[in-house]
Image (cartoon, rainbow over all chains, first blue to last red; front, side):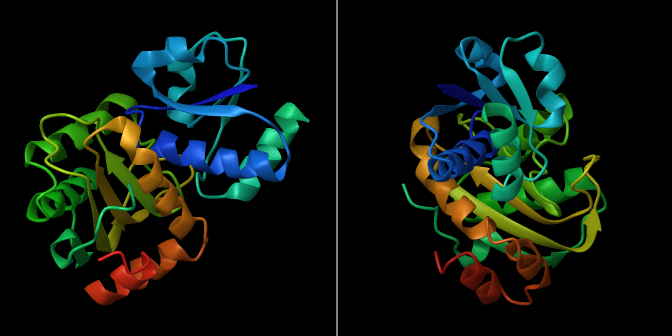
Length: 89
Length: 148
């Protein structure tokens, strides 16, 4: 499974999403590759099943086959767990 | 790469900022004082928010300002500014912001270990409030894991 975390710079916020998503997925025992990318590399998200991002980028991401999950608090692993479980479970 | 060190120069407590741009600039100034970035890096961080919106407000009360690696980055660095009066970034859920982090990263590939350390600190939901209430630079360094 491929999961992509998207932010404006591809560092910082998307990196935090990647790190915390990996922690949550490990706990949920889900095998997935999580990549942090910036908006200009959206083609890297083309074959992703799940896109993690913040509300600001949903429009820019546009039409996609992936399930776009908007995260409000990037440090809240409970929020990530609930939303990833709902998407993948 | 571990979390970049947090020298005293990289921290400002109870700063006064009239708006989010001023707050981000203060954090950028700290990166400059710490030798991690040129003054133009603050412009880049502000430009990212103007272009993409307040997505850097990644948790209630906390902004993680950053731009892409570029010539404005002199070395990996982290700066922390706490605000006497919080400012709004225009975020739908996480305003107002009282703690501004600024992150400068030399190369994107190497940054994930540093970001993982940040996650270790802030996955504790009390960390942001503790930083906002910190009264000394040493308090901030202690909350951030004594990375000075």
